[in-house]
Image (cartoon, rainbow, N blue to C red; front, side, top):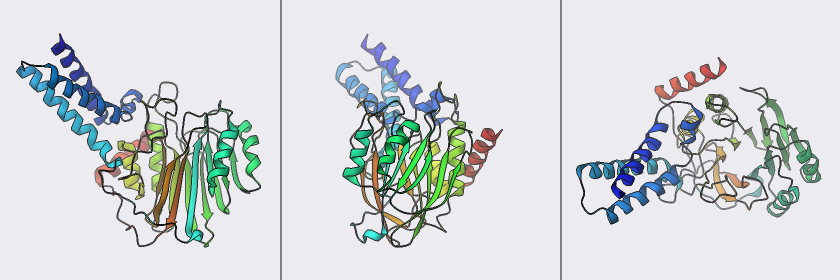
Length: 351
């Protein structure tokens, strides 16, 4: 009986591992990018159980065990870079000159969540230079306006469709634009943030829709938006940051393509996953809230903050200008297949 269960689970986990290796954009296949750590745990547990329970190994059970090992290696290949076992992509620096630092807090508030006091307390306790909220509507805007005396530079896009966005900044903002790249109800915010030292930082705040049966049945809209944002990034001209809820995990093919096209670095590599979703389910968490930056910055600190009633934890990141800590070519770069794939994604979404 155990052998039958063992073989059945091995086949299931093999399918769950191989399916997302395809380029299919169907929501349930792309959704399998998310639980790679959880699937790794299940694969390892099944392997151990097989070694303990099975006494008389047959060629079939041996092949199943080999398939499980292959699946485990495949899953770990994606997630290990987001652990302490992998070299850091972004150098760490001490706090240094305060005029050259930038602290950004991203918080997906979850529109029905009305614990604004919880979020405001985090803002007062951790004093970011910039707060960006996602899923914020008119109700949240009214509550967040309480911090405008400290954060006088704002961008407000209140929406009641779970895609509202607000930016509150202590630092001056310029060249602000709100854009709807792919879907006419999913905004992006672009602006320059001026640091106290005078350096302007090009910043893109993003929140594309996820692939899901209740949103988009395929991931083409999300993927195309990330590709188009990546193509607008010009790290050779400006220090650049892209941050927000990408509705995608850090290790997915789409996010890797975004990083290749943009040339931006991920400070989590070699440090940890910093899982921000789901705040209420410890067994089903993955990194959906991201911050990527150009080589002009090094990392001072990155912290997942306590929850405040949302299904996301806020993420607080402090960066510092450090021209010689990271090289312009330290991040991944695209090859011809990547460029062709990006063209296909955009063409399909625009069609």
